[in-house]
Image (cartoon, rainbow, N blue to C red; front, side, top):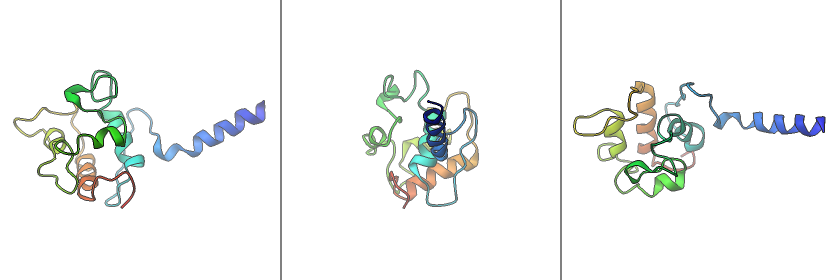
Length: 128
C-alpha cells in the first residue's frame, strides 16, 4: 500500500510541468508556446474561474477549459495567426470598447506577449 501511494505521488509530480500553483505566474517562452504547458494553465488561472469561461458557465458562450472548447470560437475570439482580429487580445490588452479581461486583474506584458505569440504560431494544441 505504501508503495502504491509513493508511486502515485511520483507519477503525479512527474506531470508538474503542466500544473501550476494558484497565483504562480505562467512563464511563457519567447517562441514555441505549448498549449498544455503555458496557455491552458494561463486560461485556468485567469479565465475559467467560477462564473467565467469554463465548461459550466460559458460566459459570453466562451469556454476556455480545454483546447477543443476554445477551438469552437476560433472564428472570432481566437483567430490563428492574426492577433489584430483576435478579440481575446482586445480584452486582455484592455482596449477601449472591449470587456477588460480578466476582471480586476491586469496581466503582465509577458503574459500578453505569450498569448499573442501562441496565436501567431497558429494557436495549435501542440508545440509548432
